[in-house]
Length: 264
Image (cartoon, rainbow, N blue to C red; front, top):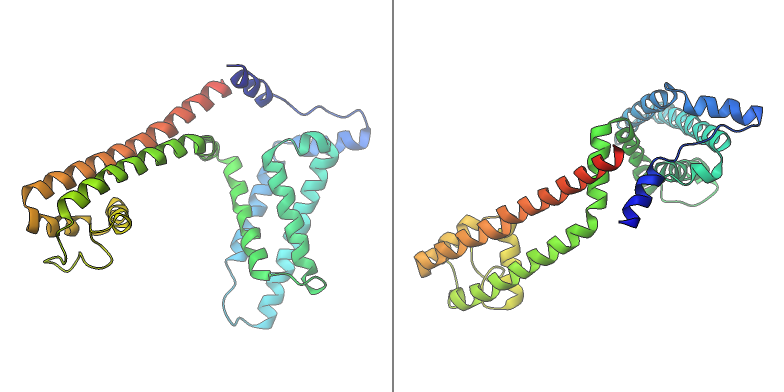
Protein backbone atom coordinates (compact mmCIF):
# COMPACT_ATOMS: atom_id res chain seq x y z
CA UNK A 1 0.00 0.00 0.00
CA UNK A 2 2.86 2.36 0.89
CA UNK A 3 4.61 1.67 -2.45
CA UNK A 4 1.41 2.38 -4.35
CA UNK A 5 0.97 5.68 -2.48
CA UNK A 6 4.56 6.67 -3.26
CA UNK A 7 4.01 5.89 -6.95
CA UNK A 8 0.92 8.08 -7.00
CA UNK A 9 2.77 10.95 -5.31
CA UNK A 10 5.81 10.74 -7.62
CA UNK A 11 3.55 10.59 -10.67
CA UNK A 12 2.29 14.08 -9.81
CA UNK A 13 5.73 15.75 -9.53
CA UNK A 14 6.01 18.81 -11.79
CA UNK A 15 8.97 20.80 -13.04
CA UNK A 16 9.56 24.19 -11.37
CA UNK A 17 10.40 27.40 -13.24
CA UNK A 18 14.01 28.44 -12.52
CA UNK A 19 14.84 31.86 -11.07
CA UNK A 20 17.62 32.48 -13.60
CA UNK A 21 16.28 34.46 -16.58
CA UNK A 22 18.08 32.43 -19.25
CA UNK A 23 17.00 29.11 -17.76
CA UNK A 24 13.48 30.50 -17.32
CA UNK A 25 13.39 31.35 -21.03
CA UNK A 26 14.45 27.77 -21.90
CA UNK A 27 11.87 26.49 -19.42
CA UNK A 28 9.10 28.43 -21.20
CA UNK A 29 10.10 26.86 -24.53
CA UNK A 30 10.20 23.33 -23.06
CA UNK A 31 6.79 23.78 -21.44
CA UNK A 32 5.14 25.38 -24.48
CA UNK A 33 2.17 23.39 -25.75
CA UNK A 34 3.42 23.41 -29.35
CA UNK A 35 6.98 22.33 -28.53
CA UNK A 36 6.16 18.61 -28.20
CA UNK A 37 3.97 18.76 -31.31
CA UNK A 38 6.86 20.24 -33.29
CA UNK A 39 9.24 17.51 -32.10
CA UNK A 40 6.64 14.83 -32.89
CA UNK A 41 6.42 16.12 -36.47
CA UNK A 42 10.22 16.13 -36.67
CA UNK A 43 10.32 12.51 -35.49
CA UNK A 44 7.69 11.51 -38.06
CA UNK A 45 9.57 13.19 -40.93
CA UNK A 46 12.84 11.67 -39.72
CA UNK A 47 11.28 8.18 -39.80
CA UNK A 48 10.05 8.85 -43.34
CA UNK A 49 13.59 9.86 -44.36
CA UNK A 50 15.03 6.68 -42.85
CA UNK A 51 12.55 4.66 -44.92
CA UNK A 52 13.68 6.31 -48.17
CA UNK A 53 16.96 4.39 -48.43
CA UNK A 54 17.34 1.57 -50.92
CA UNK A 55 20.10 -0.73 -52.04
CA UNK A 56 22.60 0.63 -54.57
CA UNK A 57 21.05 4.11 -54.58
CA UNK A 58 22.95 6.98 -56.31
CA UNK A 59 25.65 8.80 -54.37
CA UNK A 60 23.89 12.18 -54.61
CA UNK A 61 20.75 10.62 -53.14
CA UNK A 62 22.71 9.14 -50.23
CA UNK A 63 24.32 12.53 -49.61
CA UNK A 64 20.90 14.21 -49.47
CA UNK A 65 19.65 11.66 -46.94
CA UNK A 66 22.82 12.06 -44.85
CA UNK A 67 22.38 15.83 -44.72
CA UNK A 68 18.73 15.45 -43.75
CA UNK A 69 19.64 12.98 -41.00
CA UNK A 70 22.32 15.40 -39.77
CA UNK A 71 19.67 18.13 -39.63
CA UNK A 72 17.40 15.97 -37.50
CA UNK A 73 20.27 15.02 -35.18
CA UNK A 74 20.90 18.74 -34.61
CA UNK A 75 17.18 19.36 -33.98
CA UNK A 76 16.96 16.58 -31.37
CA UNK A 77 20.22 17.70 -29.76
CA UNK A 78 18.83 21.23 -29.44
CA UNK A 79 15.64 19.80 -27.92
CA UNK A 80 17.67 17.87 -25.32
CA UNK A 81 19.71 21.01 -24.57
CA UNK A 82 16.59 23.13 -24.11
CA UNK A 83 15.04 20.65 -21.69
CA UNK A 84 18.30 20.11 -19.80
CA UNK A 85 18.82 23.83 -19.25
CA UNK A 86 15.17 24.65 -18.63
CA UNK A 87 14.21 21.73 -16.42
CA UNK A 88 17.59 21.00 -14.90
CA UNK A 89 19.47 17.69 -15.06
CA UNK A 90 17.80 16.27 -11.94
CA UNK A 91 14.25 16.56 -13.25
CA UNK A 92 15.26 15.78 -16.85
CA UNK A 93 16.92 12.47 -16.03
CA UNK A 94 14.22 11.50 -13.53
CA UNK A 95 11.92 10.65 -16.46
CA UNK A 96 12.47 7.47 -18.46
CA UNK A 97 11.35 9.15 -21.69
CA UNK A 98 14.05 11.80 -21.38
CA UNK A 99 16.74 9.20 -20.66
CA UNK A 100 15.70 7.39 -23.82
CA UNK A 101 15.79 10.63 -25.85
CA UNK A 102 19.22 11.54 -24.52
CA UNK A 103 20.53 8.05 -25.34
CA UNK A 104 19.28 8.39 -28.94
CA UNK A 105 20.95 11.80 -29.26
CA UNK A 106 24.28 10.35 -28.08
CA UNK A 107 23.95 7.35 -30.42
CA UNK A 108 23.14 9.67 -33.35
CA UNK A 109 26.18 11.80 -32.50
CA UNK A 110 28.36 8.68 -32.67
CA UNK A 111 26.82 7.97 -36.06
CA UNK A 112 28.04 11.36 -37.30
CA UNK A 113 31.56 10.58 -36.04
CA UNK A 114 31.64 7.16 -37.74
CA UNK A 115 34.53 8.34 -39.90
CA UNK A 116 36.67 8.86 -36.79
CA UNK A 117 35.39 5.99 -34.66
CA UNK A 118 34.95 2.45 -36.05
CA UNK A 119 31.29 1.62 -35.41
CA UNK A 120 28.64 -0.73 -36.77
CA UNK A 121 26.55 1.64 -38.91
CA UNK A 122 23.70 -0.85 -39.35
CA UNK A 123 23.30 -1.21 -35.58
CA UNK A 124 23.34 2.58 -35.17
CA UNK A 125 20.60 3.00 -37.77
CA UNK A 126 18.45 0.35 -36.11
CA UNK A 127 18.82 2.07 -32.73
CA UNK A 128 18.15 5.45 -34.33
CA UNK A 129 14.96 4.04 -35.85
CA UNK A 130 13.71 3.37 -32.31
CA UNK A 131 13.03 7.12 -32.11
CA UNK A 132 9.57 6.39 -33.53
CA UNK A 133 8.66 5.19 -30.02
CA UNK A 134 8.63 8.86 -29.03
CA UNK A 135 5.45 9.32 -31.03
CA UNK A 136 3.69 7.08 -28.50
CA UNK A 137 4.15 9.83 -25.92
CA UNK A 138 1.72 12.06 -27.82
CA UNK A 139 -0.80 9.21 -28.27
CA UNK A 140 -2.16 8.96 -24.73
CA UNK A 141 -4.18 5.77 -25.19
CA UNK A 142 -1.28 3.92 -26.82
CA UNK A 143 1.14 5.28 -24.24
CA UNK A 144 -1.09 4.02 -21.43
CA UNK A 145 -1.28 0.58 -23.05
CA UNK A 146 2.51 0.36 -23.37
CA UNK A 147 2.87 1.47 -19.76
CA UNK A 148 0.44 -1.22 -18.66
CA UNK A 149 2.37 -3.85 -20.64
CA UNK A 150 5.59 -2.74 -18.97
CA UNK A 151 4.04 -2.97 -15.51
CA UNK A 152 2.63 -6.41 -16.37
CA UNK A 153 6.03 -7.99 -17.02
CA UNK A 154 6.24 -9.44 -13.50
CA UNK A 155 2.71 -10.85 -13.73
CA UNK A 156 3.49 -12.28 -17.16
CA UNK A 157 6.28 -14.28 -15.52
CA UNK A 158 3.77 -16.03 -13.27
CA UNK A 159 1.44 -16.58 -16.23
CA UNK A 160 4.27 -18.18 -18.20
CA UNK A 161 5.05 -20.42 -15.23
CA UNK A 162 1.39 -21.49 -15.18
CA UNK A 163 1.50 -22.16 -18.92
CA UNK A 164 4.67 -24.22 -18.47
CA UNK A 165 2.99 -26.26 -15.75
CA UNK A 166 0.02 -26.94 -18.04
CA UNK A 167 2.37 -27.99 -20.86
CA UNK A 168 4.20 -30.26 -18.41
CA UNK A 169 0.97 -32.01 -17.34
CA UNK A 170 -0.27 -32.43 -20.91
CA UNK A 171 3.20 -33.60 -21.94
CA UNK A 172 3.12 -36.42 -19.41
CA UNK A 173 -0.41 -37.32 -20.48
CA UNK A 174 0.59 -37.25 -24.16
CA UNK A 175 3.58 -39.54 -23.58
CA UNK A 176 1.29 -41.95 -21.72
CA UNK A 177 -1.35 -42.02 -24.46
CA UNK A 178 0.50 -41.43 -27.76
CA UNK A 179 4.02 -42.84 -27.15
CA UNK A 180 3.24 -45.92 -29.30
CA UNK A 181 2.67 -43.82 -32.43
CA UNK A 182 5.86 -44.06 -34.50
CA UNK A 183 4.84 -42.36 -37.74
CA UNK A 184 1.62 -40.56 -38.49
CA UNK A 185 -0.86 -41.51 -41.17
CA UNK A 186 -0.78 -37.93 -42.54
CA UNK A 187 3.03 -37.54 -42.33
CA UNK A 188 2.82 -34.87 -39.60
CA UNK A 189 4.20 -36.91 -36.71
CA UNK A 190 7.74 -38.17 -37.16
CA UNK A 191 11.29 -37.60 -35.97
CA UNK A 192 10.74 -33.89 -35.21
CA UNK A 193 7.25 -34.22 -33.74
CA UNK A 194 6.23 -37.17 -31.58
CA UNK A 195 5.38 -38.19 -28.03
CA UNK A 196 8.18 -40.69 -27.41
CA UNK A 197 10.62 -38.48 -25.48
CA UNK A 198 9.89 -35.69 -23.01
CA UNK A 199 11.85 -33.03 -24.92
CA UNK A 200 10.23 -33.75 -28.31
CA UNK A 201 6.83 -34.00 -26.60
CA UNK A 202 7.22 -30.52 -25.08
CA UNK A 203 8.36 -29.02 -28.39
CA UNK A 204 5.43 -30.69 -30.14
CA UNK A 205 2.95 -29.28 -27.63
CA UNK A 206 4.55 -25.83 -27.81
CA UNK A 207 4.25 -25.99 -31.59
CA UNK A 208 0.59 -26.94 -31.23
CA UNK A 209 0.04 -24.11 -28.72
CA UNK A 210 1.26 -21.59 -31.30
CA UNK A 211 -1.34 -22.92 -33.73
CA UNK A 212 1.04 -24.57 -36.20
CA UNK A 213 -0.81 -27.59 -37.65
CA UNK A 214 -2.24 -28.54 -34.26
CA UNK A 215 -5.37 -29.81 -36.01
CA UNK A 216 -3.28 -32.10 -38.22
CA UNK A 217 -1.46 -33.45 -35.15
CA UNK A 218 -4.87 -34.06 -33.58
CA UNK A 219 -6.00 -35.96 -36.70
CA UNK A 220 -2.82 -38.06 -36.58
CA UNK A 221 -3.43 -39.07 -32.96
CA UNK A 222 -7.16 -39.59 -33.54
CA UNK A 223 -6.32 -42.00 -36.38
CA UNK A 224 -4.45 -44.14 -33.85
CA UNK A 225 -6.32 -43.51 -30.58
CA UNK A 226 -9.78 -42.42 -31.63
CA UNK A 227 -12.03 -40.32 -29.35
CA UNK A 228 -9.51 -40.29 -26.51
CA UNK A 229 -7.17 -38.18 -28.66
CA UNK A 230 -10.02 -35.82 -29.56
CA UNK A 231 -10.83 -35.25 -25.86
CA UNK A 232 -7.11 -34.67 -25.15
CA UNK A 233 -6.68 -32.00 -27.83
CA UNK A 234 -9.97 -30.24 -27.09
CA UNK A 235 -8.94 -29.89 -23.43
CA UNK A 236 -5.43 -28.77 -24.45
CA UNK A 237 -6.67 -26.05 -26.79
CA UNK A 238 -9.33 -24.82 -24.37
CA UNK A 239 -7.05 -24.68 -21.32
CA UNK A 240 -3.66 -23.76 -22.73
CA UNK A 241 -4.74 -21.50 -25.58
CA UNK A 242 -8.08 -19.83 -24.92
CA UNK A 243 -8.01 -19.67 -21.12
CA UNK A 244 -4.32 -18.71 -21.14
CA UNK A 245 -5.04 -15.89 -23.61
CA UNK A 246 -7.89 -14.62 -21.43
CA UNK A 247 -5.57 -14.60 -18.40
CA UNK A 248 -3.05 -12.46 -20.31
CA UNK A 249 -5.80 -10.02 -21.33
CA UNK A 250 -7.07 -9.91 -17.73
CA UNK A 251 -3.58 -9.03 -16.44
CA UNK A 252 -3.30 -6.17 -18.95
CA UNK A 253 -6.75 -4.83 -18.06
CA UNK A 254 -5.89 -4.95 -14.36
CA UNK A 255 -2.79 -2.83 -14.95
CA UNK A 256 -4.76 -0.42 -17.15
CA UNK A 257 -7.33 0.06 -14.38
CA UNK A 258 -4.55 0.57 -11.84
CA UNK A 259 -2.91 3.24 -14.03
CA UNK A 260 -6.30 4.92 -14.53
CA UNK A 261 -6.78 5.10 -10.75
CA UNK A 262 -3.29 6.58 -10.36
CA UNK A 263 -3.97 9.23 -13.02
CA UNK A 264 -7.25 10.18 -11.36
